[in-house]
Length: 286
Image 1 (cartoon, rainbow, N blue to C red):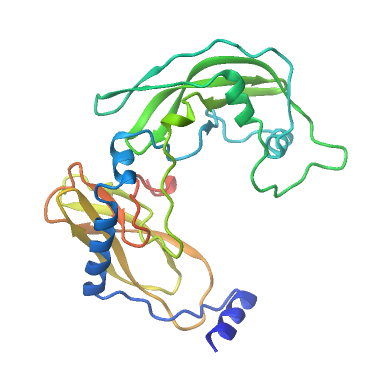
Image 2: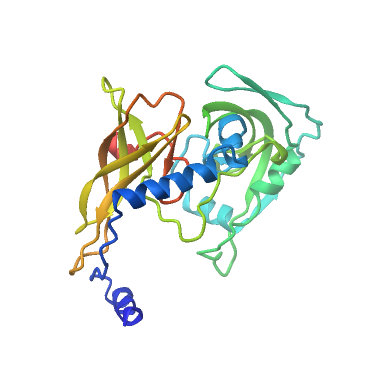
């Protein structure tokens, strides 16, 4: 019966066929204890606190957000062409300075290695090149510079290869840090459902956190909860799904949760995925 109803939900798109999934305080605490036990002291925990974990990819927009349509399509399909020799210098290590003042030494990749990664087609091609082909992205120059990167340890400046492309004003930027020094952002285990997508501190209220979360238009929100240890804070939003007709829109909202003491240097973990919640809100909510 449930399988049939779930199928109708997908077909109609306008009906919310959910069942109440509210989690009791006891179940939340049990789940939070599991999250803490799995994360505290793990390889992911160590990398997040002291390694190099980019929060996005190693290709940076270079400050431009609206590339020409032809350039975006060509890049997506991996249609590149070298129109200049790439620097052949063998690079040594670079020093990364973190917001807390600590410094890391990381190896760098050559321009050729960066270009090889930059010019790869996307893993999933949504829009193929037209019948006559895409217009090639002709690289006319590559130089070593810097870019700003968001990481698990804050925003830093990192070495990057800057590629000039004929007919495109802004440069294509690829982080020059070698893969051996990079730890990928951890992914939620299969079946994990995100509860909290971002957080921020509340000015003048050191015991409070502002949480950003997603919810359905007809969901009932009963509040936010936190489970605390000396190193971690696990958070969730107590939601209850509607069992009646509703649209399928995901809405973003914020809610505060009160801690027993200020957050300090503790990590915030999402109870649904068991992963760190990044500080910061969706831009339009700032």
